[in-house]
Length: 106
Image 1 (cartoon, helix red, strand yellow):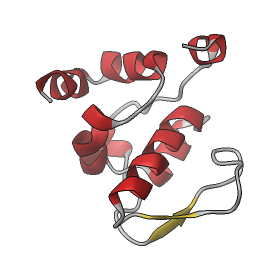
Image 2 (cartoon, one colour):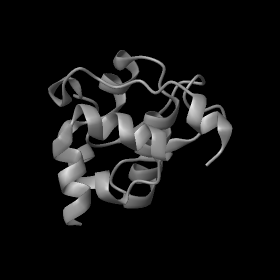
Image 3 (cartoon, helix red, strand yellow):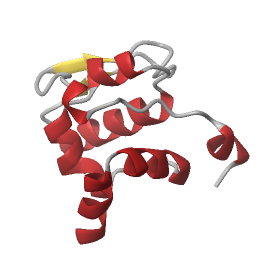
Image 4 (spheres, one colour):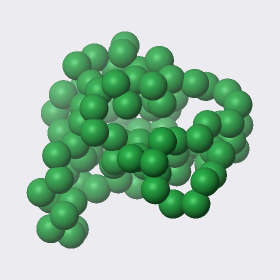
């Protein structure tokens, strides 16, 4: 784990119910979340969907960012397979034990 990942603050919503982001179509993330080449994430493509969720969880600075781009049901489904820094996973699972239980069961 990098020192950056260990020291970085991760945004976490108060409730998963706040996560009402898109569930279909193509999503373009703002530069403060995805600073690479302009890319549209096709939510029907499982690889695009997972990469977008990983980037949003890693790079969001506010709960509003999370709410705008993540969907609670989709997050629950993807959680066990998402590749995110251990500190991010720990703060999310501390706030939402159901995610920890789901990851343990996978």
